Image (cartoon, rainbow, N blue to C red; front, side, top):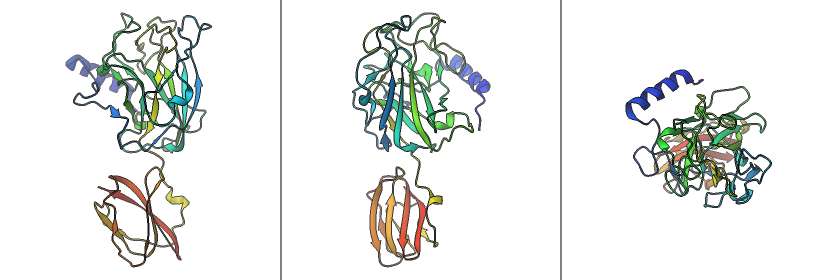
Length: 322
């Protein structure tokens, strides 16, 4: 369903006038959406990167580029090692398994801010073909009458769908449902995530803008090696699952109870395999007797794919673990 940004924007404006803030607050505050890097919600991390650094200062585009960190620092789990993008620089991340539009947030981007208020921001775009990219509808309510200085502060409650909203070790989450549907985007098979530094200046010649046409004001200038957004990692929450259509469903299999808490049973015998949503094999055993209880006490809550193979062929069903 396409977003109606006019009414959404009107709602945000009215909410801001009444409450003084519109969006989730800082790490640790009630209502925050920050996700710690060790959270079990992460199923994978970026495995590849293409980096295009921007200048240390956008007004001198032929001057020195940002140079802090190496591209490889943005691969794998967030660990505080970063790569600086520079003014308007970009990093395009790839993944072993595509990201999918699941329930709730689907991915998170990590920066390395040392506090809850010194925030360097970036736009986030996604693609399912590596060619056509679509931007999350970013919104900045930060004032645009006075430039935020190079070491100035921002209020997280005025920021939405911009990476860098949270301090180091805490990811800013994104929900693919926020992006309008488009025939050129398969939201259940996201192969590329692009991070684009918000230049931050309110000089109209170089400014960058949110979904409502507001200039995005963030720390500027930052004319040094670590200029711009400092990318730590991109974590995956929802991944593309095993495809039922690609499997040979040669017989009917009853799986119960489903949802299950501690164990489940299957109506057939054969080799049982249980896969996580990331496609990892988490359980395998041979069932020699029908209705044999299969223990899943050690599995985390979530969605799994249960595959049974025997002389009749194979069958796959989804299992929800409470």
